[in-house]
Image (cartoon, rainbow, N blue to C red; front, side, top):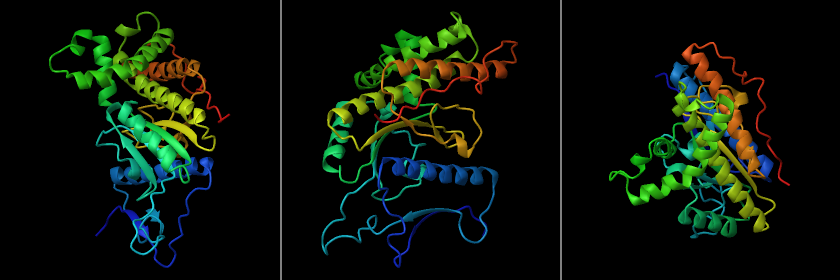
Length: 315
C-alpha cells in the first residue's frame, strides 16, 4: 500500500538520538527545521507524492520523552525546551506542526492566543518551575484566526460587538485584540490611502495584518516580563502559522507558496514602534496581492522591494 507517512520513532538501542537543544538559538533552529519537515509532509499529502521505502518524515523521540531517564517507579521528569502560546484552533496542532513530540513543548492554547490571567499564570509557572530546560518562549498566531476575525468585524461593525449573541467572556477576548486591529488599520491606511476601507480585499488584509500584530504585541509583553525576571538565557520569539502552506513565518504572506525559505520565527519586538513597521510592511505586501487579484492598474510596491521588519537580536 502506498502511503505518505509522518512517523514518531524511538530507537531503544540509541535513546539519545535526539538530544535537547543546548541554547536558545539551537532551540529556534529545531522548531524551524521541524516545521519545514511538517510542511513538506503536508505538501506531499496534497500532491499525492508517496513515500518509497524508508519514511521521509520522521520525528525522533529520545529516552527522556518516553520516561526512560528516571528512578524506577517515578514519573517522567517534565523537561520541555520551548513554551508555546498558541490559539485553540483545531487546525493548528502545535507539537505536530513543529515536528516535536512528547515532553518537548509546554503548550498553552487559548482563542486568539491572548494574554489572559490564566495564560500568564501558566507562562510564569513554566518560566520558574521548568527554567532548567526551557530555552525559548514562542507566541504562535495563525492565518484566518477566528478570534482576530471576530475582533476585526466588531471594529468594522461595532453593533455586532454588543449583540446578544456575543457573550461577556467572548467580548473579553475580543477586547484584548482591539489594539492590534487598530494598529493594523492605521498601517493599512498609511499605505493604501485614506479610502483604504473601501478598497477590495480590505477586510481580509486587516485580519491577516492584525494576526501578525497581535502575536507581536504578546511577544513584546512577554519579552519585557522575561527580562524583568532576569531570565536572560531565554529568547522570546513569535510567528504565524499559515493554514495554506503549513509554514510558520513572520511576517506572514497568507498566499505564499510553500518554500523552505519562508519558515522563520522572529525575535520579539524590543519597542512598540516596531508594531507600526510590521503593520506597514504587511499592508504593502497585502496591497500588492489585493491589486493583483482585482486586476487593477495600481502601482503598489512589490513585496520583494519592501523593507521587512527588523528582527532584533536579544540584547
